[in-house]
Image (cartoon, rainbow, N blue to C red):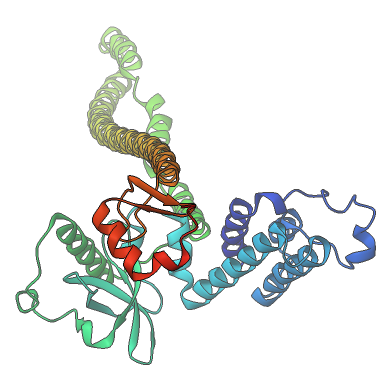
Length: 422
């Protein structure tokens, strides 16, 4: 549980920088009068690290208490209260996602290689889903509500969407019947789908570090046991070396035979002794050949074992070096992509700011021109009859553009109201 909650706390720290400063509010004189139980993001993080939460409801209650304290201390309409509401809403959403599928929640936050391809327990239903304006795309079913299906698409971004059930097809449907446009992104999504299906067939699930550590300890115990049972060749070598002192007897044979030659004429007993010594020398020579052969065989076996061990060590070193090179290359590519993305974001921001400045400047110019036109219009006189620019002044508020307009207006009504002195 603590592993999952650490991901949520890290999101909380990112989204609420002003709320995770421990001790910032508690030093205020009015804080203790308004807040009964003090809690902040660092406090929640400490409880997660110490494993004090026994259920997700306790964690949710602390997030709600953080919102309550913020609203009480800063006010319901404050900026801090808005941040706390957003934080609580996001926390509830993360907990809902966690309870929906723990495997998806962990893998989407840990992001190991091919994280979306690992099967969950239980497995998600695989479908072809079609969003409005797009073709059918491979996806996992997360949940279903009424006539809507919540899916997560295979592909680069692994986006989520609610799709109507009539736009859902089973994954076993032939792709030729779907009439899809086979773009590069679609092909990558299908490759990821195939890898996921292969993991399903092989029963390959994601294992956490604790499980890997347990397996490594089991393997190490097995290897140590096997190493204790191996030293039979050493025993053979020791036993052979213990019998070696019985071999160097030809010296005694020479001395005895020499004495036998000297005494052969004087005593029949000495002749018998010489014959017996010669037969013993032949037996010892045969033993020497036997153990020489044993040592040569053991030496050859040791050479072959050493050769195999050397080849194994070299092969493992090459594989490790290759994997390290692949990892360095992947990190370099990711870093280059991140730098490129950052540069693109920076340039887009500059272009947006420049366009905004040009837009504001253009608005100012248009406002100035409009003001000037209004001023010029106000300074002119206009024909009372046809509203064209006037040339002939009649009285205090009446002018005309032509004599025709003056005569028409005079006979119509102006002769009764004209204030011009005559």
